[in-house]
Length: 600
Image (cartoon, rainbow, N blue to C red; front, top):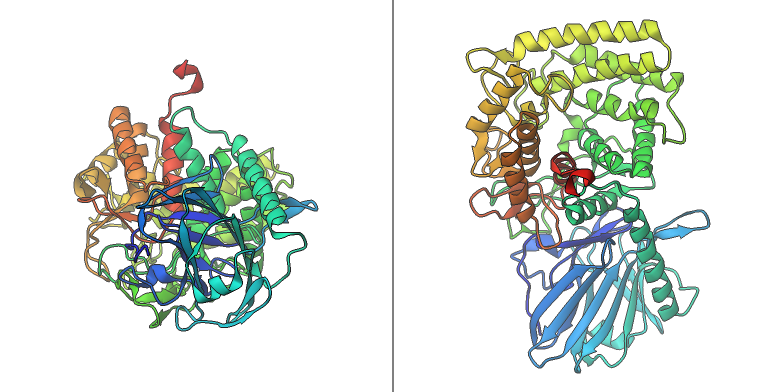
């Protein structure tokens, strides 16, 4: 048989905006949470030690006498095709996807994984191993069989495998010669309403058409089109369409660096990260995802009577995300702990107010949206603005979510300024001149205070916290956020200071000072993209292009990035796929690309 694969992040993503799954190079599904992104992982072998995960928590098609594999997405879709070759010249093709298409005037996105296995050449012998887990890998579910299905009783739901493969072969994991195509539906405990092959063919065609049509209307740059489209599809796959939430990543506890203890659960919606995601999708013309997210934050704002906001919420708007350790999983490459939940929901991170107002600003200025912003929404946002005004010069945990370090972080202060700045612009837009003057005056006062307290003339740079001397990569956003013009000597000086302190080869650290876990070891991918865009903004365009091309080369074979990267080896680390990193790729490509007119 094929033996145990090696654990790494050379993974592909399938999904349908209700759930997602990660598939390794041999078509083993190593991670999938049901019924949604933050659920109990039915497949969890990605976090089950040193890459073997042989007991349970995976779903694979094993080829006898395995030799090699090839893998790619069907062009401009979220449909994955893996080809396995044996040493005798036989080959088998496995197509994986999660059904996603429009039906009865709404999105049909069942929590279902569809696999199609067919012989390409020769007489391949395969065995199907379907071993779901419950309780974060603690045990296997109770199993019952039917004439054409297997039922698995999970802790929170039942799932059913419906297949035209011999049920006994699947249950007993018996190798068999693949003489005819095999279809497998793993999903809700419901009977199919049509023959399995007809259903598989229909679901494939309609899912294929959905993604091709979705990609067709993206407003992509002339250069790096394939990379941008794949990044956009990945961002779409990380949206929980039911509520509009955007998860930071599909995984929990992939360490930021080997044995660092920096293992976090990212299967939630950070309002900061999600703002950048919807901004990127909006620039590409994917306005529906933006509208869905705006509804998500509108509900969160409406639920906050005094305007107080957490930095992170559950995909269903849950506020409490209590963090705990899971002992039943050893962790990625046995590098625990595995954490479920995230303590960040308790943090004070004042930049969140700017993130919400900046995202909601689209309601008032984007003519493409079906339901534009109105006075009632503006009044709700003013409560958020009042919090920004009150807290902009107060200590917080900052964008990097320090657990025991409170400072008046410059980035948080600038984001609070942005909240007031945008509220002024919104007020003028909807004819509320007096409110516009009110917010404009406060924004100007905040701007003056930030420039006085966060500018260090001895360093010729803005610094990471008021009256401090440390630097961090978020300072590279001062131009992007509209706080400084790109040709402002203070911005140029800041870029140069951050570059000198935090560049490691072709990559950028987020900060270099010790935090709760010591000094960071790996570069932070979004920071490298911020650096690339800052270089372009100040006129160092060729350098920016070279660094961008290098980042494209650091993606895995499917064009995906995680959160972090080893600046020496280029290996990907951190939760995967990281939406922030994919946003950076899109944003940098849009900024750096030649125009269509220039290309011809």
